[in-house]
Length: 227
Image (cartoon, rainbow, N blue to C red; front, side, top):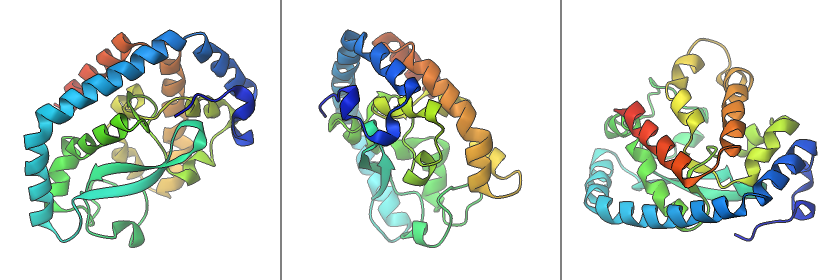
């Protein structure tokens, strides 16, 4: 994806916060280029090494419940553009049509195999394909669905300057966010008012320290958090 000049950004993204971060990222072009090289090389190696596991996961998903192996959902990516995110399917077929978008741990739509995949975060492995095709990065702000992006405050918009990530510091900090969502009330409102603001604060902090070394640290912290 071609890097956009500030003037080329969607009008919804343009504000003083975005301009400040755009200038910061422009000054760190070398770090961003190295990050992309690392993304491609690391994701290609991981796909090769994990290919036997992918076959086992695909078989388990297929045998456990009717439906496709992969679940595709539209998320908002870099520069506010929509893209399809890939996940191993962990819910019954057409789950998004029979329930809320936010999924909590006790959701009856989650399959037996799906619970295991979610607990170990293995449903996210297929996003390595997104990393290879350039729609995602190994580390970066997690991509949201459009309606949550529409609730962004102006100071959150700079996060859309980056490719979204498979993991992020915010993902580690909120790995058990479903416990907050189950605290009572409207899950969407709880997410927007109580979870999204601190997540965005962590995302913006990550943007200030972008480097391959930082990404490696986040990846190791992610593995430790899952284990």
